Length: 176
Image (cartoon, rainbow, N blue to C red):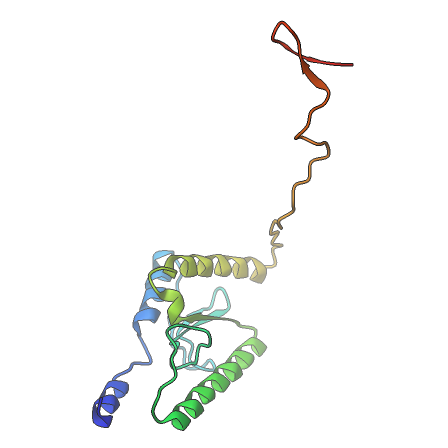
């Protein structure tokens, strides 16, 4: 692309109502969650604010926020210094906003654009609902009991039953 074409493309990138953000909003609304969008009086103008849950959700683009270890994030090959500084400033701003929101008592959830790809979208959105329901229980002071995995170890060996024998009549019996 020529510099003019690239400038035109990049200037048309939206910061509100992006496709990933709309996916999350539609899903939450269909599940009965009610929210506000881009609340200006909160640090960072969160994409989605769930006041009842005291939770804010940011839907981040992998490129713009420098999502490390992501297939969708690739560093530009031209104007390297400009992009490095810009993405680093975005990361620092994200950290500062998260810190400010948490100090105000808000839960902060960040959803990455790559987490909304068709292969993993359902898992991501279902885990979001689980997290929000968990936060609701915590906010209303109810105890949340999450059953932890414990390995089952039988008291008696099941594989070898030395005490059981078969009688000639075909019925099971126990030797004493």
